[in-house]
Length: 456
Image (tube, rainbow, N blue to C red; front, side, top):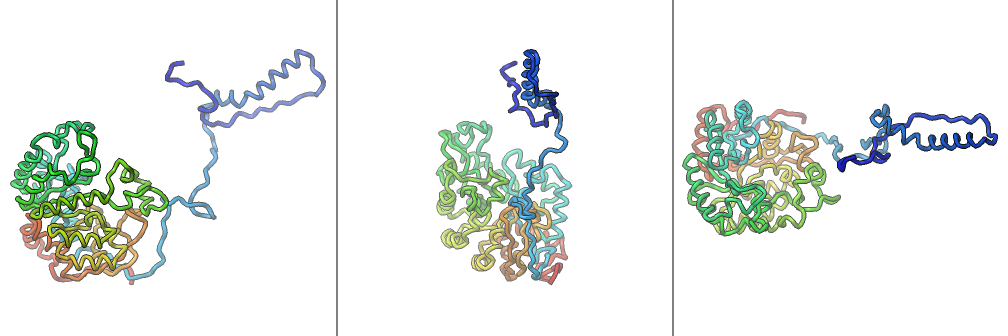
């Protein structure tokens, strides 16, 4: 037996039913010595037989293994939370909007990560954009260098008028992924080199810079400490974006529940139980407040640079505080990508907030998504429908609840959908004009509520 092998014992054998063994005794008279010996052997065999047959029949399958009690919630049984599929009995007005009321600029999409190398999928999504009156999508995954060139070619060869592209910072460079000390961002002159690459990218037509959430959350310094969002080393990069006139869309932190323990009090327990890697609770991560405060210090330090707080500045659970930030930082904008799940469960607060800050709101989805999920955005912003899903997925991916529509006024919808983006983001205004010319049937101010009535 080699060191890698372990002895065969009943504990490490799979369970099998032992073969039946029946032992009968002819009489109970005293036995001669040889008979007593035989009886002792027989008793030993009876004792060892289940183990012996298990060894011999270890690979014999069990025809009818015992079944665990199904946790299906029926007949008084417990129910697994992941199997909870409540069907509402409410009968309320319900409308599926087949396209947006006005042309839309989606400032938050990820075409490189979700559709790269698939020209047919991109073409099909452009058809979806046409059906839904989405004039432009901003792909946030452009990177820099060769990947940027490849992404420009992939989206712009046939659909340049429909896509904007944002650059991303390559913090690692040619360093080793598991050795932050070798990363390019820790080498002398990194910010200046990145600024020059951004200038080249803008010369190629890039419209902005996207910062992903791992910046500040997991990226490390050579000593193992976390890279700080507000580290002065990066100031030349933020300043360069202001000089170039391109916005920075920054994803900082995540939903509040992701920073809480995954326990019975966590309202996103079901989601986090499926994606435990989405949890940032624990001493190895900075607090959510610390991350958001560091981001805000950068925004305050660079008033000539425009910042878009992705996902409602990642604080859709507290719109009052987001409003305070917008009041404090005139160079901050917000967009609702993957956050109508939060906005829709506070419809009065959300409606008041968006109307009050209509000049600072942009539109985003975090797509490309299936068409039904995109249409839930139109339904949320444009109707008074109640108790409807925010996603086509079952179970819903971001909380076990439904949402209500907020029925925004036309002037607010136009600012949200396209007017603010045309003011802020290079390349939007001319693409909107091209969309208007190439899609004469698009409704800028007619047939405002195209709907399919599901029931009244």
